[in-house]
Length: 78
Image 1 (cartoon, rainbow, N blue to C red):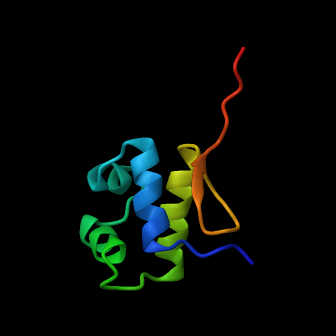
Image 2 (image 1 turned 60 degrees about the horizontal axis):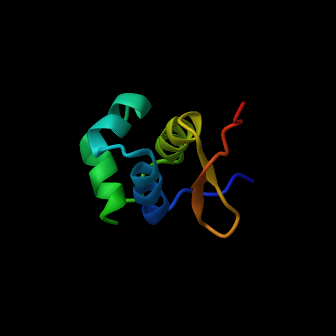
């Protein structure tokens, strides 16, 4: 089973990428209100919404860790 995405992980992932909520909206096609409400703990989005947000963050290079942390994937240096 895929790990859920917490509000804290979402905020941390955006910070690692230097993304605003608007940038996450553009990449995930989820409304800003939904993202803002999720990140402040006001709502629990549908699983499909969480999956879209997580996919957008992973596509940008975020790796979600088993201990509920986040990091940027290591880029190959040539």
